[in-house]
Length: 239
Image: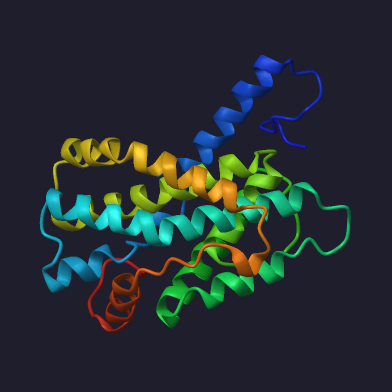
């Protein structure tokens, strides 16, 4: 149990709640070495092809990404956290969740990027919290659920973080690629707060379903952009 764990003995209910919120903020921080730090979530390829050129384009892109890939990420992060919260020593089904998410990611480039992010997130999470064992390089939402479980967070927290990162990572990348006004980009992400919350709630509700029945929303355009980006040179982001 770490100093940041919201479940450490001696904390009252109010202090536990505050510690949990602080932990959640750490995981959702854009300075984590994943997300917009190295991955654009399809933004760089969209910028190169000319379909994303300004703040209005970015808002539409983020909205579409949130209601496709974001729904899936929120559900799988929450399901992973839930499975580990109830783990009694037997296989909690993380490998099955990872395989189901793999099946929902048609693009080989997108799969590779997700696993690279997952591996980095696990390394980061294990430096701070007692993250449970699992796949070495799981998909990013699976890794996020594992880290949330290790940090003492709930499935709802995992879903919210996944939904939040679905828009903040790409928005950070767009700001860097296009030199957008950071204040205008912040306004975009603020306008999407209600959608982020709705997607997080949908992910939390789905968490108790069998892995095969979890959401399978596919953003075909995102998959195409991932493949185009893989072949691009030069490029600023890994994906």
